[in-house]
Image 1 (tube, rainbow, N blue to C red):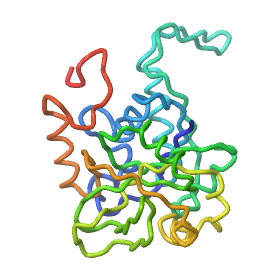
Image 2 (cartoon, one colour):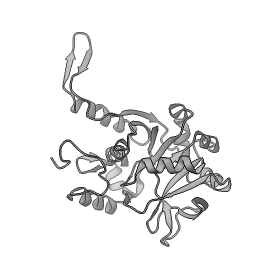
Image 3 (cartoon, helix red, strand yellow):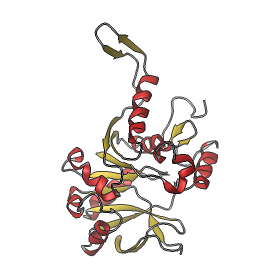
Image 4 (tube, helix red, strand yellow):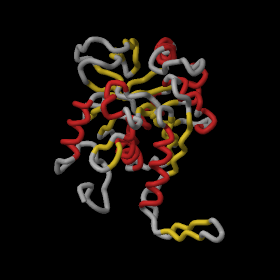
Length: 263
């Protein structure tokens, strides 16, 4: 199953750090938060990623190119203009970086990668949030629900779209209320290809008309996750994540490393 990562926004609320790079490349520890997100999915066997690039997207491509070179022993045949990698891969990943426009909205970015996704169920997430979510349980829940889209509902006051849930279906979606302790959209979606037809074009915000249409049709399900979830919306959020990553047991590290992340 493919994983689409929305990584094209400007990151205006964390502009002090994103002025020189896209927000998904802001480091938590020694690696960008995008890497942490992909490690979460890979820990559950999902290794094929489609990254929706936009603002300074060439830096995301550059990151993966340098990651490949940095983690491999290589022979450069300058005479024949070839190179050969000898060592084991740094990650068992396939990463497709797609330029989805500078000012394209979230729905438009998703629609632009339709040909890369194909006609199959896929995952979608934002490039700025981590969790100890069990992705495989989320996928099973989605398949059992019969919904076209399942999002992960988490509890966090304020700033995000609030959800009203009845019988595991979303019956109301309100974008960014003023914090009332309700469940919010934590991302980590599982989607059917039918959702592409609900997106008009580049100006479509995924969290508005498409999700509202899904609610009206009874096709938007909620997987409630009461475990760890944290996004990186502000510099304060980044500080929280940095402190947690420096701890003995970072709450979203659901993978095992060959060496410590602090080495």
